[in-house]
Amino acid sequence: MGIASILIFIVGYLAIAFEHPLKINKTASALVTGVLVWTMYAISTGSTTELGHHLASTSEILFFLLGAMTLVELVDAHQGFYFVSRLIKTEKVIKLLWIVGLITFFMSAVLDNLTSSIVMVTLLRKLISNKETRKYFVGIVVIAANAGGAWSPIGDVTTTMLWIGGQISATGIVQSLFLPSLLSLFVPLAVASYVLKNQAIGKSEATVQLTPLEQRDGKIMLFAGAGSLLGVPVFKTLTHLPPYMGILLALGLVWILSEILHSEKDEEAKKHLSVGYALTKIDTSSILFFLGILLAIGGLESFGYLHALSDQLATTFGNQNLIVTIIGLASSVVDNVPLVAATMGMYSLTDFPMDHEMWEYLAFCAGTGGSILIIGSAAGVAVMGMEKIEFGWYLKKIGFLALLGYFAGAGLYLLVH
Image (cartoon, rainbow, N blue to C red):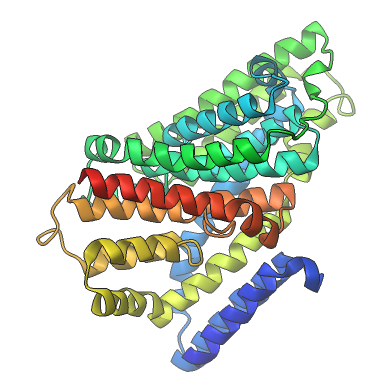
């Protein structure tokens, strides 16, 4: 049954990768793959206890994604991003590319890579009407978000795991990984600048005219939305509750504010400004896709294959830096969370104490390696659904850029240390 589960995962993965030529929606392939992997597990072990454990951790990510996407759509419905798009409006495609990349990089470190990607894709829809150009920008957003998350203890799930586990300290990770992470963004930006130099941006939506009342409401919702998103990592630090609780609190508070702003309007007039309307705007299929992928990977983890992979790497290659580099590349195919969890279980803090080079390098590789394939990170999966980006297109146009950035940043880290 174990071998059958691996074959099911491979076939499902290929179906997702070749969604366009097969004309089968990737969400359907992901859901079938996830269920069948767990079916094999249930038949072979006779137990479903592990499924509940993985569903709990998966649900945390799904609720976070649902809350963040709804919150961003609610701000967008009030034209909140109109003011931001006016600030960074430029007719020069290369200048806009670098501005977007750097904003995403630093935003991801403060918030996290998933939320930052959702916010930036929503903003790019206001700035770039040319679909092909926007897809390139979205690809850079994925690279920038994952690079920005790698050097911050709250920027990526894996760095947060290592931080909470005592493998890294907040100051240590920032000092060691800031420059390698920045280089892993600069290299793709430099190459993309050459590729996009003759591309058109298209018409910006920042030219729309708003009434004074719409401008007031838009500014209020923008500041409320941004403030509540920034408060999520603070809430997590103070309460030690998981991030999805913070994002749900943020959504609830902004929802209440929205109701107060439009309390005097009739139901029809405020219908398009409600959370109910925002929920119809988010791409639910991308959330279900996420569910299918995470369930499938969780099934493989329960079979013990991810731990076996880590052990096999240690036996085959021996060299610690080479093993971590390969784990980073593997995180583009398999979710980086179980890979990092397996690595944390393999090595003790006695052998590798806090802020050891191995832990820092692992945080970098697992964080940035997920950019090489679009389904290698939460940020990539989210924008894949939002912008309908094909697996093959990303692999062909963006994957190589991410790979160059990955090796450039890794090389810098190893050179310095």
